[in-house]
Length: 194
Image (cartoon, rainbow, N blue to C red):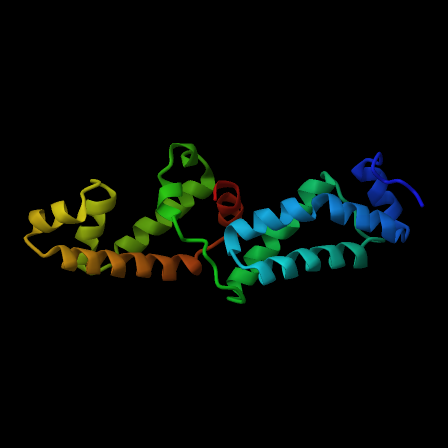
């Protein structure tokens, strides 16, 4: 049996294109774990992740004869994963933990500057503007002025529990609305910055 360990991706892919199943197995074994980790960082669902990775490799095999990869095989596989994650999210086939800790990532120094990041912040701003006045005020004091719940309660002369209720409502509205605004670029950004 051929030892594929010294083969480049291009060589292994060329063999797979002409029907070499061992070349497919080699590619699968080489990339399965890093693809799974990338997808799992977003979905947090083992079965959904395994299904997505399996689907990517089935399609790779089924389309092998007509497939032309102009970028690296690794880049092609990661791009395929991003599109499949995006497709599953849009079809609401998976429960997504994508928004857990989203704000921490959005406001992390390394996040600034990318187009996807700016797009997401614009979406958040537009959603915040649709919140009821008091809810919007509480959210902005928390996120833009970094006030604690206690400080907000004192400033607005309301209870801390009321502040918590407003924040819960605001975050619930954000998560619900953002799901419909996801683009493939945003999914790619989230997969990189999760």
